[in-house]
Image 1 (cartoon, rainbow, N blue to C red):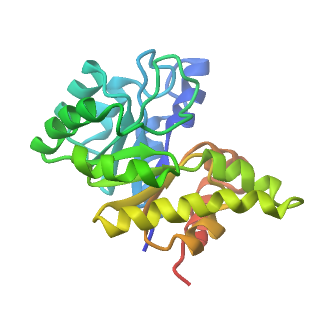
Image 2 (image 1 turned 30 degrees about the vertical axis):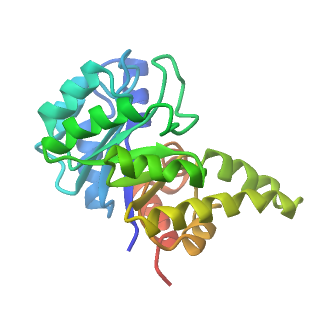
Image 3 (image 1 turned 180 degrees about the vertical axis):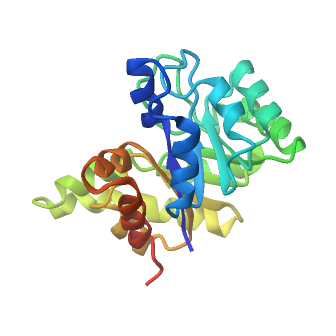
Length: 244
């Protein structure tokens, strides 16, 4: 079964826009779990423009499913993760000013950095996933660096899926995702995916890459919740991830 981890960053963006504590991020996380989410994801950034470091600390004792913290492994981020000890840490090569994640790691160029960071996390008993483009030649580097999983960066897939409605040849890119997933499975890495996955494109991805352990979805799920309600939306996403 593929787990749905809800990224709650956008709820924090809404709270921060007005000040105060509406919506209450702790209650949002608990409600997502109550409505069927199998994980909670947060991505704290240095400017704390959405999830704040204190939010992460406050969430830890409340999250009863899988807690996933993702981000760039700056010293401040690493200290936060090591103190909170989530189930999983997903390493993303974001520069501090990035609006959102937009690429995966070059596991060859950054091999020594990744090895050092991953070793520190795994010594603390934290499972490590690293953000990766659909590039089969970068998978071995993830394994060598010590990662337990890779998270496929699905932004390009989502863009090409939309285009494929009128230009089916554009989905050729999907072969790179299948090959990357196959390579990961062959060498013993588990597989996550995330970025711009939505109710339109998620089912196709799941059907063709059935070994997916987990997807992390935030922006699209929050947008859908404005129309369908949060509980119904979570169930709609889980339905897309069903094994049959």
